[in-house]
Amino acid sequence: MLLYLADFLMPLDSSFRVFQYLTFRAILGALTALIISFMIGPWMIRKLTDDKIGQSIREDGPETHFKKSGTPTMGGTLILVAITVSTLLWADLGNRYVWVILLVTVSFGVIGFIDDYKKVMLGNSDGLSARMKYLFQSLISLSASVFLYHSAKLPIETQLIVPFFKDVVFDIGWGYIILSYFVIVGTSNAVNLTDGLDGLAIMPTVMIAVGMGIFAYLSGHINFAEYLGIPYLPNSGELIIFCGALVGSGLGFLWFNTYPAMVFMGDVGSLALGAGLGVLAVLIRQELILFIMGGIFVVETLSVIIQVGYFKLSGKRVFKMAPIHHHFELKGWPEPRIIVRFWIITFILVLLGLATLKLR
Image (cartoon, rainbow, N blue to C red; front, side):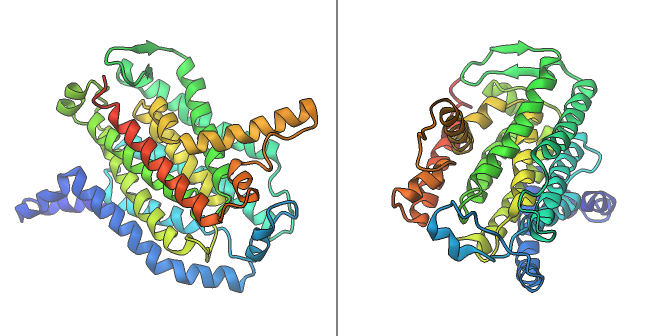
């Protein structure tokens, strides 16, 4: 929005040309989202507290979590507001990539909001039924995937890129839609499963957004893309504005969500952020890089699948509790230790993902 204003004013003052630079607008996007979070955060926490929109704690969960009962939840609304406003202000609104990622992220946030609302406000402990939740997630993901497939202007936009190899590209045809669907829905629910400790999900999300934002910027620059051997995707660099907004809003939320948390993001935040990362990977053709960078989310999801599957087969449990961060809690690890170690692991994985830029 403000980009158009800068374009209008550029003939009057050449200094407005600086708004043409993606990196500058990405920084402004991050700062805008951060400021919005700091400004709205305290008010939102007070409002959630006054309205008694508090987190309910599972009775079969770790005992250390009982003291968190009643902590305000649905704070992910703050993240969504900051991302949306910042992206609309600083991104090129004529870019289809921007609208796809923004609409998918907000739509998944709406699903999470309904789920949280039913749990907290209506007293339905199960929230939105799993069947309805996956139905809505599937409709949104498939709609986005079909749109991207049919609106693709270059073959590379729907091909599978394999990291570490410069020329290994697979033309998967309609498989692109299936792959995109599973990446978006899978990442959304993986982040949701990880969001069980204070700050555990938001900081890895921020770090991955930084890493994927670098890929988006490089993919949108023909010279960098050619030099590094990654697909050149015209106009994909604009996605770095969304990444900047996500980073700013995430850090702003972490200010209130760090241990001991003053507010939880709820499904409205975790489902939206996961979907945002998933569609981002799809847009820049780096699904496998997301798998590397988001290794923590992958392990958390696999721990649940293994736990449930093994229990059904044998009646026994592999972990003390799933997702796996609860397993470490029950082993006696303090919550901050689990959180920080998972952050460190994510930082290493993001660096590994970025290293593939030169290992081709």
